[in-house]
Image (cartoon, rainbow, N blue to C red; front, top):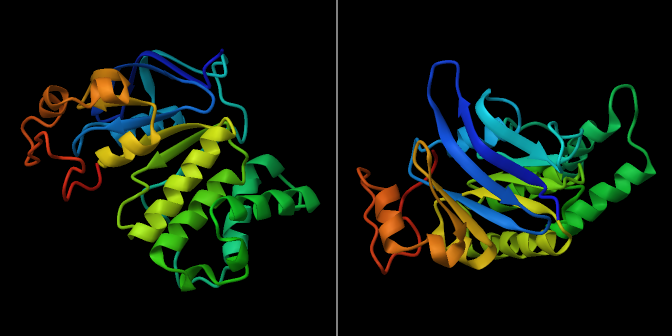
Length: 252
């Protein structure tokens, strides 16, 4: 089976010189891979590199066997959003923004686009809130709404940047359920997270990075005490055999 994302000995480097290297992993259809590492490890750089926003300075990256991802193939749930909660826009209008890559220039959304938006809202369990002003939603609901926006492009590959930061238990469980649904539909998922429990619950494989790739493989083979201590060495985070969630470790 051709992987949705194939990364081989790749490096992504910002113009200023900071980056991440030694990256080699695949993501198959319906597979979720957790990207784990301390602040400044290069997780956001890797995601940006896959999107083409940070230059690739070594190695190869392929999308369904091709050198470039077709329009709409990749969906992104960013760690932060540019949306002003005071802006008068509905949740449905926000989700419709995800159709723009498919629409191209000078084409208005049609029936098919509206159906896809409704389906995305149903997938994240917000179908009854589509007419609600986006800024009136709870933080967790806005996060799920932004995930619906990413899904509206009907991506084959979904990139998630710390999606569980600040979520209460209800919204966390809803997001976990959504990720499981997407995997069943054959969507490939790459999720940057500091939440080891999430990796164990949802993901099939893990990539550990700290400036370069330290380990890659099935979750229970990679998330060992020795690997985690090596990955987080020199940080203020203490890892022990009782740790499931890296406490207070947010961002990159």
